[in-house]
Length: 204
Image (cartoon, rainbow, N blue to C red; front, side):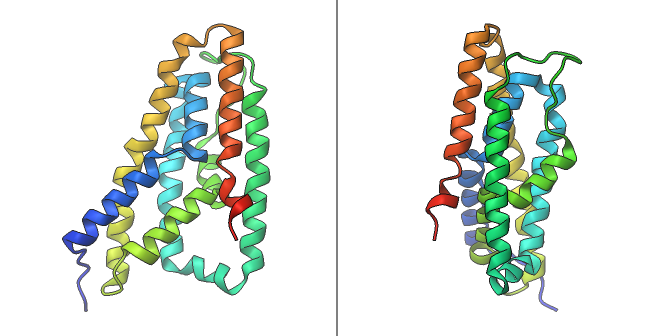
């Protein structure tokens, strides 16, 4: 039995990839930023946890062969891609149409844990990251063990990276107490969320 050993050079490269892909803008980060600004820390924690656990689960599923299913049946991937794009457009509209900061038990509903977990299945950037992990950064020797290590490394790095975007949103709350400022912020977040769909529209 081959022991799962992730060589130092693989570990370093994987860590760099995990950081660069997790900290840069994408649907999860844009949504956490907007949620932090509109709902605060306590109400956004389930959303953040759903991103962390949902993405880790996606990485594991892709590594264990789910990606091969889409290679065998490209139409499934196409349906997933465009379904996810339409859902993101709807989310962008919801963010852009928000008019007041929610406090305590005020009206407005942030994304739930389960919804955030499920969202990873239609998140184009998350799929690209998961496929990159499995195809590029996990050595073939001792694959299953190395995949588990890779998923753990990604989770440890991804969690604080996406939390940074949530923190940015929370820090902005004090500047968004005026309706005009909040509307401008939410419209900007909606536009950035739409722009994050460029891989859908411009990829082959």
